[in-house]
Image 1 (tube, rainbow, N blue to C red):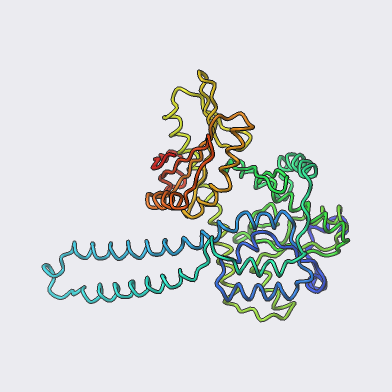
Image 2 (tube, one colour):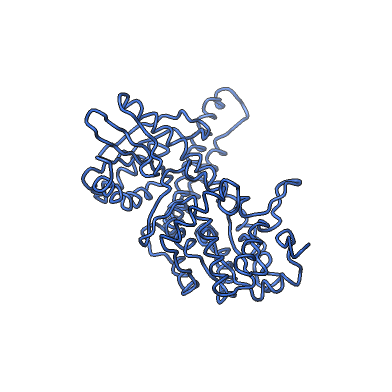
Length: 454
């Protein structure tokens, strides 16, 4: 039975010993990106463990590409946390003072004296904010040199795989359509990306990619590497929590047993790999203590666990925000162009096309939602010439980027940043910056309010 259904069998203790002593450890993009989210000591300890197995590390080209494309977004996300904390503290202080004043304790109560409490809390908040300013000054920014990436560059020198050709990528996408319809792992959960974010298509190195097939491309690159180098045991390190990678049982909560049996079978069948296993960052650090005798602390393991969990939950919430933002802009377009036809673009870029049948003009609208205003500058820089290309070589007469922010302050900051950096737009490319009320993530009737039109 085991020979036929090896994917359903957990490796033995002897197998685990072999894995940790000789396996090739493959890194996913999220392992690299989460380095920016960990506290300094936890990050240092993870680097140390990875360096101890450096000769056996390998990164698929797809994972490395996703890391480079998403690095600035993660850095900006971390930077924004400082302003989020300030808002919480300032609003809490103001709310407490306001509510106490409403009680009029000095006039209406003989013994309750809240002045000392208010003064003490106010001083604590002031001191904390001052310390926060100092911490923010040392926090990595999107324009800074990046010591974390420099460390990764050294660690992964000559350990990144080669890209597939456009012909190979196209064949994988064709196979992906069939696999996704039958829920064959990995990646079928990512077909929602086409719904949640219409910027599904991008290009790099002369190859056109579709985001929803990213996990499948990565998986094929792992199989290709295993086959070419006759690798007998592989450990895939990923902080992806989706069930199209993990074999999950639902007993007293969801429990990850290991990789999906289908994946174990496929890599064995296609590449002859005898052992395939998976860990997330927390598990990797935890078991490194047992099998590599590392000095990882329980505190670092706990911090890594919380970061991974928060990151996964944050991605799910942000996808819902993207859906709400797209809907809010569509409602605004329907009002603004009430006499025109508005089509959802099936090619993925731009999101919507407004057609004026009388003038025979096609107007494209590409929607972007940001948590941090600094990110807008870099997205506009990367995307504006793609928009210009669409107006020169495609079927669009104009294209407008619609930047959706979550509040007025973020919208004004974005406008100031773009004006300060003199962000010029090519001909036939326009920009709208506005706000959508995205507090209710399940509300698909949120309205979009433009603040800046260029």
